[in-house]
Image (cartoon, rainbow, N blue to C red):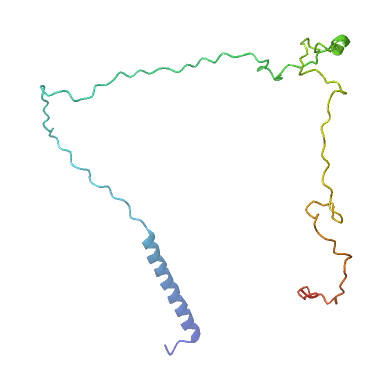
Length: 181
């Protein structure tokens, strides 16, 4: 190796490394290959029939088959009740148009009868305004003096005018301002 220069040694080293890498890649890929499955031999079939004897005097333990009856389902469509819906064509109406009944002036002003002809009951009659008793209303409790009208702040005492504290404006937001007494 004394006769080889540095460049030749480097190329031999690289070529050896590449050859070794190729051998390792082939060895690793062989580990991941699966073997082809081989068929297991079938069991041998014997041509002899085993001897089975049936005693005609023995009681019959075999279950008797019950007759199976298959009923076809009723596929007739149910009787439809006419609800006014139209199921043919492209325009369908779900409900017919409702019209407001028209009453005459006599029907509207008759106090003994409703406009549709039903008699008026005691429950339906309008009470005379003068005979109706007004319920007694208790006055609401008075608000404490000096309280706010905001719910929940009724009992907060007035602290007086706002106080302004001047601080230096160096921009440090973590600096303590004032005293925490």
